[in-house]
Amino acid sequence: MSLGVVFALLGAFSFSLNSVTMRRGISRGAASQGLYVTVFLGAGLFVVASVVTGQAFDLGSVTANDFVFMAASGVVHILGGRYCNYRAMGAIGANRAQPIVGMATLASVMIAVVFLGETLNALEGVGIALVMVGPALVMPRRRSAPQAVPAGGSGTEVKAFQPKMVEGYSFGVLAALFWGAGPVLMRAGVESNGLGILGGTVSYLAATLVLSLTLLLPGQASGALSLDKSARKLFFVAGLGSGFANGFRFSALALAPVSVVIPLMRATVLFTLVLNFAFNRHLESFEPKVLMGIFISMIGAILLVI
Image (cartoon, rainbow, N blue to C red):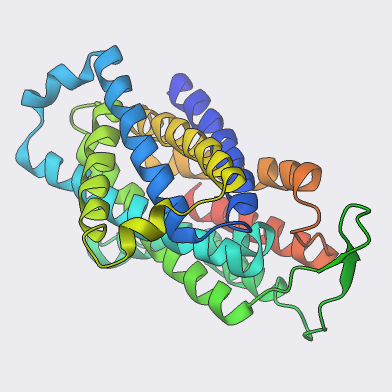
């Protein structure tokens, strides 16, 4: 359990690194381009990790049902959730997207209630209310015209970031639904065998297979490769962060229950705020009500699973 806690916190920091670098990357490239880089890179990292840890050689001990759950987690969580999260971040920024995608915890609880017959207590009811309040607070009251700001002393001006709220909220909610189901599927796949790294490898390979098929679509392969140098570097760093984060998370889920891992993983919000303030201040909103929305939704998510 103690090692699971450490892995969860390391995963939270790694996810924040992914979020901050991806935010900069999608300001220079498309969300789909970032998805190709991070998923393919993550798959390679997990294959290496599974061989180094020896879990790759335990594949024969995994049941067919566990294998299906692992693969389904990859398609749902890594592909669906990640793409929608990238689109949400690109539309409204990582800070504003945090409370919305944070509703993934609420989605996990609802899945448990509907499909596993679990019940809600009063504390969890308060958590649901807080999770729902958070996204409402990050919505700007009025849309102002984007103001021009100096571009590094060059004498030119660039438009300040202007959030696209409908797109951001739509993809944020979809990301929350996918990410709510993902941990439940992964926990089901590794609970009986404890092979978290192998579970992550199967998950990433399943996502890679599905994503590779999209390259067969006309123009998709050329579009995926048409990245400028700076975006490619940022997506690569984001892929490393995501790969390590998922490795830590899957390992944590193999050692500790979802009710322990998920609240600890919400520390990603705090790490992301600090890193965004240091590196992405020109792209993010740090308005008091946005910060309040982030913290309220984080508290609500924790109340849902304690």
